Length: 411
Image (cartoon, rainbow, N blue to C red; front, top):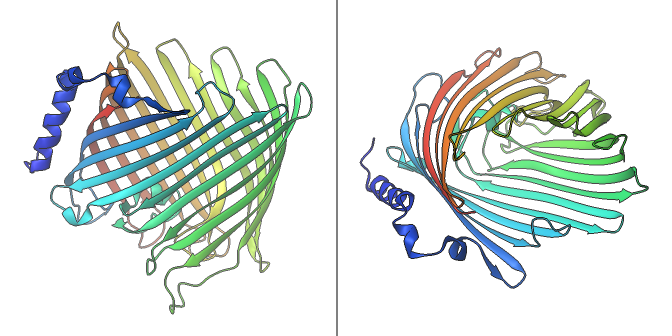
């Protein structure tokens, strides 16, 4: 491992806290969770060291490095966790420091705001997030935006998501809701990626068919638009916006005594504003949790959706993604936790864009082990393997291994 001075400092600080020597000088509850009037303030810190054998997700020349991760965050919460009315504001700073590739050092900023309000029959929920990033763009992040066909690189970008929902309880078992979402990614000028913006409005209803199972249905209309960051080049052109509409039927709640979650199935139809074909296909979202025992649980998620690519003009892709995770608590005290997770994704390009007919696949598997020293102090180890392949001529296929050690301080 690199002998860079900052690694020695990080190791010393981590061992000091883990051994409890530093902790004896203060009460954790006084510094890691305290009140300022009606607001509860919670600072948090993650310190980690990671080895990555393919920084830029390249298939040819691979560059490896040790990365020091320093991630402080701060949450201001108004209202108790069990209160029907809450406001939570969280700021997180991700600092990545590379031992041999210091030109890749980066600072990413995340701001998240959540609001929950309840008044008689009306409920309002708001979940919003903005990420200002300059770190390496690639891997799963770019795959989810159909931009996996090039090697990763550091790039300035803003990603945001705004989700608002108003629910009205019509009767004891019946409710209706209206929601609006906006999201997208804005890349720096001159980059080869397209800025992407999405808007969607949804009207839905819910019915509590059984004591622990609710049924629901929803109809939506949305628009998506992409804008190039390179001008004067005919290859990078702004296409018409994509209009889509569709609906879902689903169920959520405790499906059995050991199985809970939600499943919804629907159909989506999309076309471009100039009349050219978009995509039409079934859409599915599922999120299930199985609790086999008090110590053993598993989660399963699946989604199928269609949207615009950030890499090509007027290019729709359909994405299938499935993930499975298993968690097991170990030991008599239950402080040890082992986890195993796998993810598989496939993008198929449809419509009339330049990449139509191509497809790409993404696979990852990770194993983790963590130990909770105190309620406010935990350590963890994680190994992850990722691999991506593509049928498109000239695309970059890659694999990457990551090994991480980290320490969490805070409630």
